Length: 68
Image 1 (tube, one colour):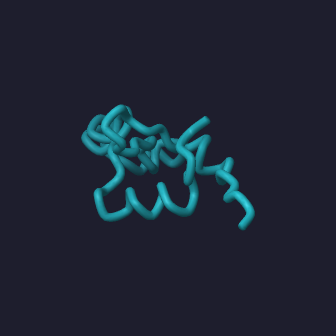
Image 2 (image 1 turned 30 degrees about the vertical axis):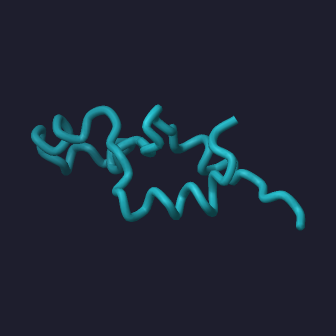
């Protein structure tokens, strides 16, 4: 059986924490920020953790060996 490849697009977008959770950048912060209010921009600062339902799917399909 051939080895699975890591999806490089996923490797660039996600980081794995020490406890095995996946963190990602918050969406909606690149352009069209004038149409969002200050509270939206302020609360979406930094990174977020991926939901617990989506974490096994990303681990299994996109990052089978973690981030190397």
